[in-house]
Each structure stands twice: as C-alpha cells, then as structure tokens.
Image (cartoon, rainbow, N blue to C red; front, side):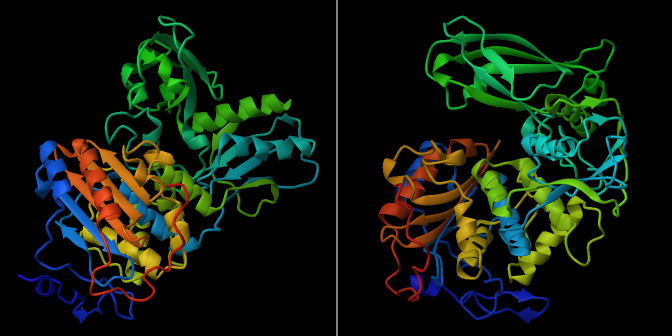
Length: 527
C-alpha cells in the first residue's frame, strides 16, 4: 500500500455528527490515524531489540506542527499508561481555564479588625492554594505580628471545607505512604505537608552522613545509622539509603502513612550508605497529618517571630464575611506549572485538579477528584479534544489506571501550538533535554541539548516522553513515546534513538506543509 493510500482523510462520529478534520476550521477531534502504521526507524527498532522490548509494547508519534498528518505513527491508537506525562492534560486544562496569571490568596480573617491584640478568634479559609510554602506561611503570620499582635491567646481555626476528604490513602499507590510524592492534597496545606532533610556525605569514608532538617518539627526525631562510602554517585543517588518510621510511644500498631499516633511523636530511622561523590542532596518525608503539620509549623514560626502562643488550634468552618487581617498571594499559575512539570510535582498536579472542580458556575463549592476529572473532560471537549480512552484518575499520572493513546497526546500537543493562546507558555513549562528539571542528565548525545521540550514519566512497567522538538530542518514537531510492559524501564536508549532520528533525519514531507509551519519561537540557544 502506498503512502498516499495510507494517509486517509481524518473523521470521527461524535453523538452521530461528523466532526471536521484536524486541518478544518472547527476545533474538533481530528479522528483516527491511518489504519496501517508506519515502520519504526531502524535505529529505534535496534535499541528496542537490544533491550528485549517487543515493538508491540511501544507507541510512537512524530507529527510536525501545522502538518496535516503524522510523519511517524506506530501503535498510536493503543491506550497506554503515560505515568507523569499525564500532567500535560492537567497543564492544558489549567492554562485554558484560568490563563497563566491566575493566583490564589490565602488570608487570616478575624471577626473585627479593631483591637484584635491576639484575643482571637482567628480563621484561615483553605482556598486550595497550590503554592503555599512554609516561607509564605511565615510571611502571612508576620503580617499579623507586625500589626501589634504578639501573643496569640485566642483560638485559631483552619477551614478545610473547600476540598472533600479524599477516598484514597497516601500508601494506596505503592505502599510508600510517607514519601513526599504520595501526599494527599488539602484545601489548606502548607509546604505540601512535607519535611525536607538535607543529606551530605561525611568528610571521610566511614563517617556517618550529615543530616539536618530544612525546617524543625519537634515531634520528629531522627536516628542516623548511615555511613559514607567511596565511589561514584549512582543515577538514583538514594538507592543505598533505607528508612523506617515508627511512633515514639510503644504499643502502637504498624503505621504506613501519616497518622495521629505519629503526630504525638515519630522516629525516622535512616540506614545505609551514600558515596562522597553525591554531594548535598534533599530527601522528603511526610510523617505528620495535615492538621498536625499546620499546628506545629505555626507554633514554631510564631516563636521565631518573637511572639508567644497560648491559644488553641482546630479544624472547622470560618465565616466568609469575617474581615481580612493578613493575606499572602501565590505565584502566578505559570510559575506553579513550571514547578509541576520541570520537577514532576505530583501534589501540585493533584491540587490543581481539585481547584478546577471548585471553579465555574456549575461548581458545587466542594472539590472532589471526580468533579475535577469531569471539569477537565469538559475543557477538552469544548476544544474538540475528545479522547474516549482517557482515564485521568488524579491529574498527576501517579496511577496504575491512567490511560491515554499516543495519538491523542499528539493531538493535545498540536492543539496547544496551533490553536491555543498559551502555546508558548505551555511549552516553556516542559523540561529542556540535558538542561533542567527531570531531564537534566537524560541522554548521552550532547547534540540533543536544548532541542527538545519534553515531559517524562516513569513508573514500574512504564516509560514515557512527550513534548516538542526541532527536526533536521529546525522545524517544530510533536514527539510522543509510550512504553508499557515488563521491559519498559530499559527503553532509555530507544527514547534517545527516537530523538536522534527526529534531529538528524526527520524532515517536512515533500508534499509540503502550510506556510505557517514555523510560526513558533526560535529554538533555545542552549543546544
């Protein structure tokens, strides 16, 4: 069958109505790709063979921006788990719903502004602020202190009613319920409910590692049983370290995630080794419940400000008509998306999904993940991006159930550059290959540096890449690679082979592309 015969006109039936093709005037789903996929490049096939990965376990799409059909499509319609690449769906929904300048404001409220003097009560309403760091939490209460409130003797209430309690537990995904990436979002959540530890090798081999917290939580006790060793730093620097967590007080059952028994006292025991070559690193744990984290952090920060604390803290509703005593505004959405995608921040992505559920005239006012998923699907459908196979679950890709096809990931990426007002912002949030974020040290070929903006995803049995790159003629193309299967973890060389093929061999088809095929900004000069 000839290439011309393979490339058929795209169409799809939605609700009995034929939608227009991708190149048409309407923003409709471009429909299925040709029924017969193209052959994979030989170098990619060789890399898969060397890794003992069947080609049937991999989906690949390469599609030039503003081109009517893909240059390469292999197993493109097969639904696969994309791991953290699913954050691209959340990023599109957030940018299209709010625009890049959206912010969230966290406020301290009181019944009366006059003569507060710390008598209280005080209230903080959770608004789903995804950027509420410990630094901003301190800034918020510093404003209170600077208004003459030096003794907090009145009750302080934290209103968490913006988000419905999650049905899942932090240890549901991989039984690692204390790890920072598994934190469950709350409407009022500081520092993503995580304590970060600096870890540095000793000056001499055999010495214990030097470990100290970024922020002190009196409830948490560290027991350091580590040792410095010689040798190179492994790619997964913490592979030689192990942790165990238990409650300080005897008689408690085994605990696998933040729990009220740990709020009264937790012991973090670190054992194992780390090479001197690794230098100083950060490792995060979430050992306290959200309520205890808010309580402990506020007491510590207030003491650091010079104030005294004799009041009580509780969870409960705060009247919406109380005046604002102090406020702190989050960074703009675009800055938060940079953090989310560059560093693959799961908690941020899950928080944004819940925030989407609270926004709009049909919002019930209390966010659930199911409502967030429904809002994302509606945003996609309004833009003609109808993906029947899509399983979103939590918006972060930290899921065994998540599914999307390479074809539809390509459609999403193309739409953002061809139709959206925020295509440049969308691309900017993605890591630059061999430059920053999760792809800082990804591939061996130095020529790939800075030529690709890609989101990566990795789970057990899943390896994924999706984003944009410059082809052999310096034209922008969409690149999608999804591998699912027992050998997926060994497909790094296959990913690099695909990127090298795009850079060295992929060109605009001779049939030509529209005149506006190169309207995107000039490539980053870092390569």
